[in-house]
Length: 202
Image 1 (spheres, rainbow, N blue to C red):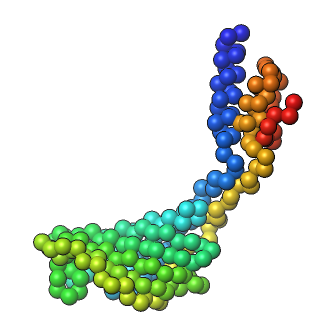
Image 2: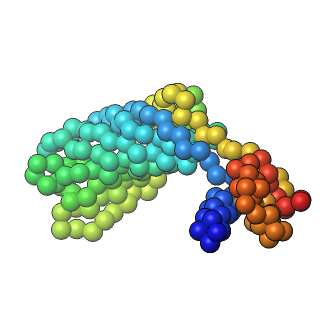
């Protein structure tokens, strides 16, 4: 009998924990993303886009004066409003530098785009942050920028928000039943019926 009671207690605790939410959590969803940027020599990035959080993670390469640079891209994109913020951080070339096309070698280099995407076209501003070798980081003033193609593939990665359960949650109902003296199979049946939410009604 003690083992059965302990098992039911564990079941109630688990259900109560799982039922604490009100149904507002977003379901995970991921699209692939493709970004073509005409900034400088041109960049093509491919990676993933989380339709729930708006998070972008992508990679690409670009050719520079001293070699080829790998790029790591992160950012956020709101499908509804079109708001986009995207940052690309360059890796060093084979010479452990990044040439910024002005003859200056840098030990770090990145750019950030901030603006809006309309019909797959970005417009807004960009800034460049670079650190000359043996120097200090310098960030440019925002400059107007447009003509960047931005695409998130339509592969079903939409963000589905579960409906809010009005009047409470399932864990509250199960806990209330236990406190009201419901035991054994009756309590186990209640725990299995996730449609029972809110205060226990007897």
